[in-house]
Length: 591
Image 1 (cartoon, rainbow, N blue to C red):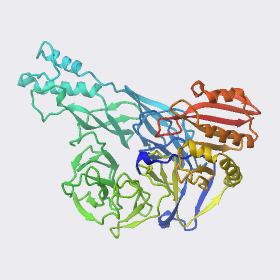
Image 2: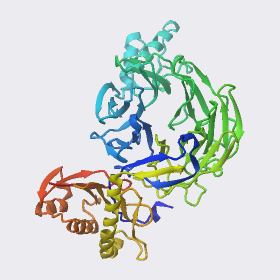
Image 3: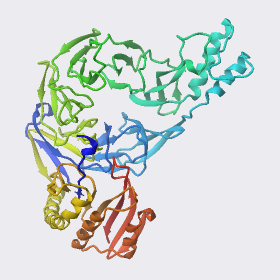
Image 4: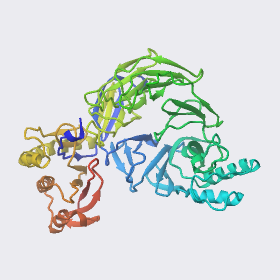
């Protein structure tokens, strides 16, 4: 569906904490039936995520983030004990993150001129700064001037393309000096944490070094090719090891390199048709055998590691506009490729997950030939049969999402992009056949709250439906209704997507309200009226100070106002995405 045809809907989302414990009648997770499982809406994110990454922390917690965002956002951690997402109190532009063997996580925050490395404690979700590294974009002329002056090869640089013509005896020394200069202060374009080994975190850095394959008389910046270089940070001494040579891996354009962990302490690097295997202990590298693909197929996508250590590749890009359905297995031991069963449909940008029995599940993805290019299908690869079977469909179309296997056997799919190209707040939980839900007392309270508030919202919706449709430019016959995801969340929505505002129920004494601020700096009038009626029905009164602030969003700056036995905290928030607009966050606490 094209962006221009998008139907804007109004969503009133009330989010409560629900504690759900899951027990298995079967016992072992390996025996759970994922082929006949059922997806249910999970706890909503606080901030939507598009290209989503997830790492598993201690005590079953999850850290979810979108790497390389334009604006810093607070990382979000899923706490299975509370069945909700918790935002950290610091906004970060996360470049990469990795779970450490001691239970902590290492998070890398990319600032304009440096990287900051934090340790995240899963117990109290506190951040502790570990190290910093300058990442300034060096001036090319200054770098060349330093080399030129040292070797007296010219008096003055007049153009960046000037050629150094040193004597043959000094060429290699100059080249070493130039690389040393670059390594010590070069700009790291991208950095990816790939593994931890013997107290060190190994990163793959996309940076620049002199290309020794080019003319020996041309030592200008034009010779500084982008390369992938392993670097190591010692967690105790906080010292860097930059001594390793770049990996012999010819980068193509600006596309990101995929890094995936294999067995035997090895990391797989792939981009388009090239692949290199790097051993984190021995530091040895070996190039994969050439892809068994036609010249038409541009990229195979990593799907997972099979129980015997081989690697499954499935789907990817056939050309610049079409996805592939081809699947291949790469033998690590024999360095050979073999074709396996093709996917039921072409796809790429899916979430991949290895199930407890060794099968591999692909979730959602992108297929430009489909009616809705963003998919909600899932497929499962069975290594013993070398075949694909269809899994249960998602509730929501999504690509570039992330997935994690929870400690109780459920699967959580997080974030991604919807079929109307909107970043998603939603998560989904897949319950394999054989799981039995046991609701805690908190979950029962949430169910009662959900039932009571559904009736109240129905009355409010009937009063303002015509205004809602007019303000959102929706058709008069558009169906707007109350919906629930089964875990204490209520929607006023059209279909499955939210767009205008939501209320978040935190506990019996706290409610959070999010109101959209349009580009003109004004609030949605209908959203304000619905919120006002909701608060009146709940016995929560406002005063002139609150009304004045809400009519002038530009004046809001974490204001705290007492009214009718409640404390209102009003601040700006980035709760909505995809529209260039922000929102107002109102926290209401009963005194």
